[in-house]
Length: 132
Image (cartoon, rainbow, N blue to C red; front, side, top):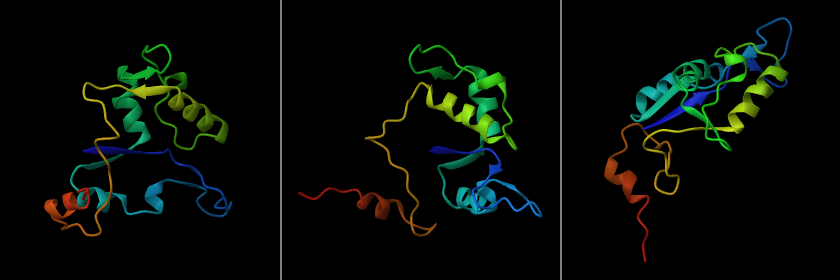
């Protein structure tokens, strides 16, 4: 299966009305729990959980040195962070990689959502058959 990591709660462009909620997550716009429940093999977690369970356990490696790398300030909760702070988090993510014993091979695995939750495995696999 695959894990989708949701970005932290933050300001969204053009949704910064001072009279109401000003910071949002993707949960505010999409039915992510339902998606996760309907499609086996898809796990959706928040950035905080990812940073606690993966990054803070030394599983993120700096791309150039291959040494364990930790989020800026060893911070795991980035909800309500300023734009500048979020930028620092994303720059760190761009310089690191998640390393596991069975790394994802993008040429051998693709993630997609079937049109319906009751799609049959053989119907899905037939979509990827190459005819000669």
